[in-house]
Amino acid sequence: MKFWRMRLRCGFAKNGGEDMWPACAKHRVAAITYDGVHNVDLRPFSRRIPPPLWNKVRGGKGSLAHFAWDIVGGDKIFVADSSSGQIVGAGYVSAPFDSIAYRFDPHSPIRPKDSQRWCHLIDVDWDSTFTSSRYSSPRAPMQTVLELNPGEVKEYERSSRQQGHRNSGLGDEQIEQTLLAEDAYSRYTPAAMRTITRKHVALSNSFCKWFRSSFGISVSQEARQIDAVFKTKKAQFLVEFKIAYQGDTRRAIREAMGQLLEYNHYPPRATCDHWLLILDEEPNQDDIAYVRILMKRYSLPLNLGWEQESGFVFIDPLRV
Image 1 (cartoon, rainbow, N blue to C red):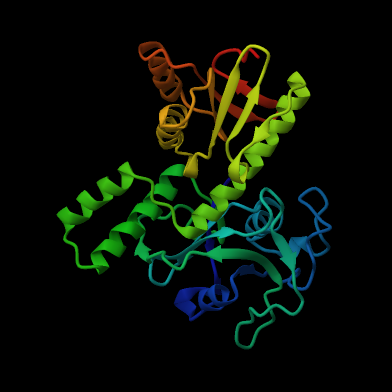
Image 2: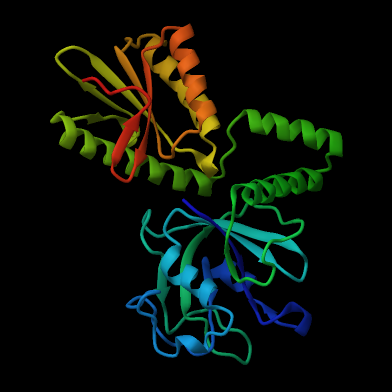
């Protein structure tokens, strides 16, 4: 999952360029265009085999390449407005998870006044609860499509939440207390939950396929294809899949531990012999140290794993 900052304005704000964000929000898309390829479907092309007249895309090749060939289903887009200096919108790319999201529509509804249609589109599940807020010292301020780093994502999210609480009449001290409480408990928007659920299903399916191929054992996927169980001749395993939302593996582990304890001990549950906590992203060294402390201090039958390109790896060998 990647995060992107995108500008949706026809020309420069200082020159009176038309803001296309309202139209994009209405039609639930992100849109882009550049002279030379405004009417060219980019799906058959790539960076290695660019379309004709690609050299006429002056100063925008990187942004257009990101838009057409890099953004996939499940990614998140933040909309920046250079006129107000605010992040004015956010949403999740609604294409199938991990599939290229770009599409070409010669009848696109996004059309500035006195200009050609913006035919390069991406469908987006815009978050109606997102509150516009200012952001500081933007990196690459002139770039139309920019991949964000984790610090920028956290800044945008936190600034939006701060402004939302400020709009509700809270003072600065109350806002900070509220943000601390929200950080302690998961707070996902409906749009975020839809993406997380899709990634849960993909992670579960990927693990089951890999496990069956590696060990010849079928895994039973439980409700909504999120959790899984399997038995061997020696033991019963419980698997908890967790998505590290915005790369936050610490929070994912925190939430998963509560679920694993409940699934194994809350009446009338029966305790499984082994607990597998599987993330969609690689944990850091502090995460691994924390899990090892839990395993040793409380004698938990726990193992932490995560997905890589070649399959799944665990902090301890997986013995089945």
